Image (cartoon, rainbow, N blue to C red; front, side):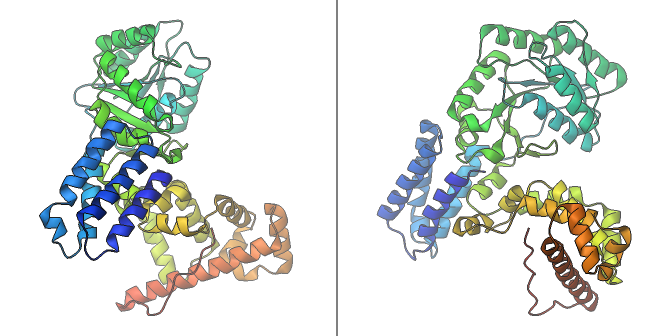
Length: 446
C-alpha cells in the first residue's frame, strides 16, 4: 500500500531529521522533492500545489526554524497536512431512522458487489441486521455473485423476479421496514464508463428510496480517472461518501490522496484485501502514519481484538502457566493470525517495518504459513498433543501426508519449541512480576 510514495516521502523526511539545523533553502529543496513524489504518485496537481504550499509556509515559520529539532517539526507538519488532506477525522455512516437505505454506486470492475457484502459483514458484526439487494440486472451473473457473497457473510439477499431495478430497490426497502432489518444495502448497476442512462437510473432510484447514504465505490488503482468520475457521480446522485477498493494493491496512492480534496466527500471505508473481512473504517490520521512509515498500532490492536475470543485467550493463558502449550495451540495461533488479514497488510501496521522491507526482504512468506498449517494438520491428535513422540518414521509420514519434506517438518517442530519456550518464559516472568532479561524473540521464519 503506497509503497512507492511512502518510500520516497520517508527518504526525504529522513534527510531532514538528520540535520541539527535547517535553512530555508533546505526546506524549499525538500518541498520540491515532496512535490515531485506526489506528482509521480498521480496525485491531482492542484492538490499537490496546495499541499506543498501549506507545508512550506508552516515549515519555514520562526517557531520551526528556531526549534531544537526542526527536522522532527517538519515531519510533524507533513503528517498533520496529510491527515487534513485525507479528511482529518473518520466519517461515520449515517444510519439513523427506520430501515435506512445505502446505495452503492460506481463503474463496472470497481468492486461494488464485493464491497456491498463486505459492508454488510462489517455492520452485522456491529449488531445490525443488514439486507443486501441485487439491482444490477444487466451484467451477466451479477445477481448470482451477490447471492454467493451474501451467503458467505450470512446476510440475506433480496432479489426481484423479472422486475426492473427500481422495483427491486423499492421491494428491498419495503422488506427491510416490514421485517425490522437495516440497513438495506442496494448493489446498483454499473457501466464501463459514465453515461446518461446510468445516471438517470441512479437518480430515479435515489428519489424513490431516499437513501441515508450514497457510497461511491472507487478503484484506487485507476488513479486520477477514478477521482474525476467520482465528481460526475456526485453531481448526478449526491454522493455522501467514498469507499476506496484495492487500496492494498495501490503502490502510488494518487486516488486516495486526491479524492477528498477534489470531491469534497469523505472516504468512509477502505478495501485492503480480497477477503470479505478486508474492509476498514478509513481513519485519515492512521493512514497518514502508514504513508510516513509510522505504522498503525491502533488498527493492529483492533484487528487482534476482533480475532481473539476472550475465552480462548484465558484458556491459552492457563495452558501456558501449566506448561501445556502444544501443537494444537500453535496451530490455532497461526489460524488466528490468518483471520487478521494478509501478512503484508499486518506488516504495514507495525512501526518501522516498512523501512526494513526496503532494506531487504523480510522473512514473510504466506506459502510457508500454509505449509506449516498443512504439516500440523497431517499429524494425529496425539502427535499434536505430545510432539515429543514424533520420531523419524512419523516425520516421514507427516511429510508425505502434507506434501512437504522431512526438513520442513523438522523446521516446524523447531519453531514450535522456540515459541513454547519464549511464551513460557514470559508467563513465568509475569507471575513473578519481573521482565526476563536478555531474552530475544526467536526468529519465526514465516
